[in-house]
Length: 570
DNA sequence: GCCGTTTTCGGCCCGACTGTTTTCAGTCG
Image (spheres, rainbow, N blue to C red):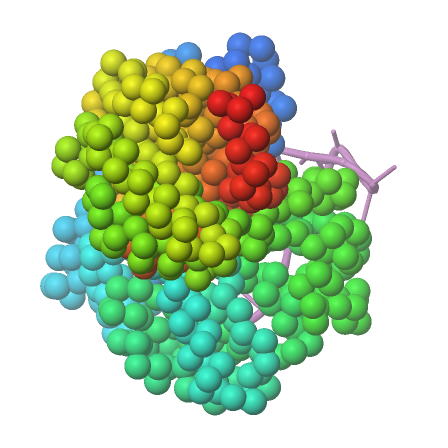
């Protein structure tokens, strides 16, 4: 993917410029262009061929020329020249906390530091400490930063971060009592990004020092990195950072808006405010010296003439334009979900028998659910053949007689085989209430064609985890999502947002594409244990990040309407 | 390097914290 290569190239270009002490605005221009490219719908080449590169946000004459150079020659001369003169591992060095471009340039110029190993030596032999401006504490921070960089290579899943944030909020609410008012997660956790690098919590209080003191004594805190009267940073399990910020009530809304981000969204918001002659910062909205708002988050938006924007949309992916034109989507809410349509039991690799599992789902307030255990090709998961499926169906019938006001559908997660056929015949599928199809093997045998073939089957209601990615382990198979979305729209098959923390598949961007094409979605937990059921919130969050409404999602439908929606009844 | 209903030049979001600075630079979010 050329656009991804270019996006990475521009990010590194910005690092190089920063290392060389170039102007910050120029550096930002490169980073903005990198972002535009990363989030571009479709390929970059057509823009080049049709001379439309200049239409892209933040791509002017100079960057256009660089993109053309890259696309025609595979490289950018100026970049190569900068790279030539920079330390060998510049990008690795710059990723070390507290070791920024200025310090890197100094260490390179004075000590010839080229690599992480060089830096380690310069720390060990005291030569870095001997440089001007390098005191003992700064050296210690860099040493810890280097250690941290080696330990924490990857980001943390939202599946871990969101519950942790909620736990921190509960702790504060309980311990701080009437010292605190409103408390909320902020940052990428509040935006429900699939991975985050820390958790931000905002608390309303007039007694900052006291509340922050309490927070640093939370038993889950393993280390306090810093604590003042407006902010504390702590580590959980020595590997995960939480930042707490204390603000006064009059600033609550402005602060919540500011600390929720994203950075790109906030830059746009502040620009708009400035054009109206206002100044927005984390303390409020100001016209000259006068405070004109900031107590409520919506103040920030209403002041610049737009409705409040849901946190999940705040990525500068068109939400600001939509808000200005009053065409923000009517986003799906957690309470819209009436069913979980992808749940496993001990009939395959689930950990609880159906009756217990079904009780947990009913307790969550759903009206119905579907057991979709694996089919026989998933032998590792004790997959079901037609005979065992028939017996499971009988058990579900008797289960339904005992479950008042709650319906259990007999379903299956049928494997899409390497040749594109399904692992069960149509007669068996016709005997079930609900059918999910998915790829679990042979990821390299044309997953696009196999998925398209599966969608042609009139009994297949949903394609589960369409890209097969595991966020912490693999990127997913090479699937042409554009064609899959077209196929789903044509055949009337839903695509799953698998809410399991390591999948979140479809991703937010793919959800947005699907919604724009009129494809229906199904948000399911793929639960193998009741502990997995709360992850529905991650799926709904991902749907919201993809601009989905309740009407885009089939498991918001009452059961009779779900049945009418199915292909088999059309 | 980008961009324009103040502008084709002169802006570009803005503040906290830390350390080593005796007045501010670097880093971070």
